[in-house]
Image 1 (cartoon, rainbow, N blue to C red):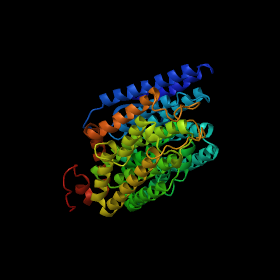
Image 2 (cartoon, helix red, strand yellow):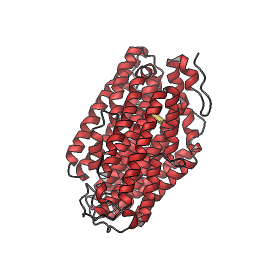
Image 3 (spheres, rainbow, N blue to C red):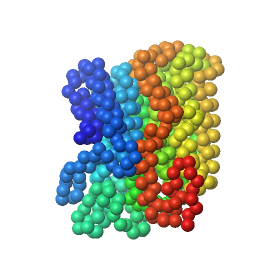
Image 4 (tube, rainbow, N blue to C red):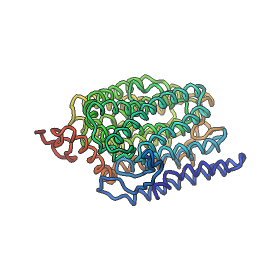
Amino acid sequence: MLLTFTVFLPLAGALALLAVPRRRDGAARWLALAFSLGTFGLAVALALEFKVGQDGFQLGVTADWVRSLGVRFRLGVDGVSLPLVLLTAVLAPLAVIGSWRMGDRPRAYLALLLVLESALLGVFVSLDLFLFYIFWEAVLVPSYFLVGSWGGPRRIYAAVKFFVYTLLGGLLMLVGIVGLAYLHAKATGSPSFDYEALRDLGKNPVTQRWLFLAFFAAFAIKTPLVPLHSWLPDAYVQAPTTTTVLLAGVMSKMGVYGFLRFSLPLFPDAAHWFQPLLLTLAVAGILYCALVAAGQRDFKRLVAYSSVSHLGFIVLGIFAFNVQGLQGAVFYMVAHGLVIGGLFFVTGMLLERRGTSEIAELGGLQRSMPRMAGAMLVITLAAVALPGLVGFVGEFLTLIGAFLANRAYAVLGAVGVILGAVYLLWAYQRMWQGTLATATGSSGPGPGPGSGPGPGAADDLSGREWAIIVPLLAAIIALGMFPRPLLQRIEPATRRVVQITAEARPGQAGRALQAPGTQPTPAP
C-alpha cells in the first residue's frame, strides 16, 4: 500500500486545493507544499524498504480491475523505476517552492502541478500496460493546460503542438498494447495486459518488429529523438519555468524509460534488429542539438536543445545492450533531471530580475549576484560532466557501454561531450562575466520561479531560492562523489534486461553480461 499512497497522494493534494477558497492563496501554497513534501517522504520510505541485490519488482500491489479484459491494477518498483520515483519526488516540491510568488491563479496552477506529479509517478511504477497507458496519457492533460494557460506569448501554439505530437504517438502505442493483449489471448485463451506475462509471451521476429515500431512512436516523440524533437524547444521556452523543470527534468525520462522497460524486454529480437537505427538517431541527436544549442541567443532555448542532446547519451547507453550502458543510462536519467532542472530554475530567477533570457543582455552578472553565479557554475560543470559531479558518472558509463557495443558511436558521442562543454561554458562566460548589462524590464515568457514584482537586478539569491538551489547542489555533488549506493540498486534490474535481450542473440550473451570493471569476453 505504500507505493499506492506514494502515487496518489499528490492527486489527493490537488483535490484538496480545489476546496481552498479562491482568495486564500497563501493556504493553497502551503497545502501544495505539504502534499509534495509528504510524497517525498513516502518515496524515501520506499527507498529504505527496497532490498538491494534483487532484480525483480518489489513493494507491489495487485488487484483485479476489469477482469473480463484481463486488466489489473498492478504497481511495483525495481532498480530502474525507483531512481525515477525519487527524482520526481525531489523536483516536485522544488517546483512548488519555485511557484510561491505566482500571482496568476496560483491555486489552479499548483493543483495541476500535483496532478502532473501523480501521473508521472504512475508511469514509472505501472506493471499493467493498460494502466501504464492511462498514466501516460494523463501526463498530457495537466502539461497542456500548464503550458497553454500560464505560458509565454506563443503558449497556445506550443501547447497544441506538444499535445498533437504526444497524443499521436500515444495512440500508436495503444495499438501495440492491444496487439500484445490479442497475442496473449490467442496463445492462452484469455487477454492480459500484465507486463511480465506479455514479456514472457513468445512472439515471432516479424511481429516483434511491427509492435516495436508502435511503441517506438510514443517513446521517440516523448524523449524526443531527432527528427521528432521539434515540439520540445517551443514547449520548454513558452512554459512557465517551474513547469519546464518538471517537463525537462522528469517527463522527458518517460520516453527513455519506455525503451528500457518495454521495448527491450518485450521485443528483444526487434530491439537488436533496430539497434543500428537507434544508435544512429542517438548520435545524430547528440551532435545536431549540440550544434543548434551553440547558435542560440536565448539561454532558455539553449538549455532546451542541450536537454535533447544529453538525452541522446541515455538512448546510446540503452541500445548498447550491456550492463555498463544500461546502468549508465538509468543513472544519467537522474543526473539529467537534477542538472537540467537546476539550469531552468536559474534561468527563471534571471527572468525575474532582468526580464529577459537573451544571453547578450545578461553580461557581468557575477558582480551583483556572486552566490547565484557560483551555484550556476556548479550546475554548468555538472552538465559538462566534470569528474566529481553527477553528470560525469552517467556520461562515462554510457560511453563505455557504447564503446563495447560499437566504437564508432562512442567516438561520435564523445565529440558531443566536447561540444557541450564549449557552448555551455561559452554561454556562462557571456552571461556572468564582463561588463554588467542594463536590465530591460520584465518581459520574460510566463511566470518564472515566482511571478509578480521581482527583485532588482542586483539582488542575489533569496531564502526561498536557496531552498531550491541547496537540495539540487547537494544531490549533484553527493551522487557525483558517492554514486555506488544508487548504482547498486540499479545494477540487478539492468542486468536482468541485458540477459533477456542477450537471449535473443545468444552469441552476444558473454559480452553483454560483463560486470563493470571487467574485460569483455569474446563471443563464441
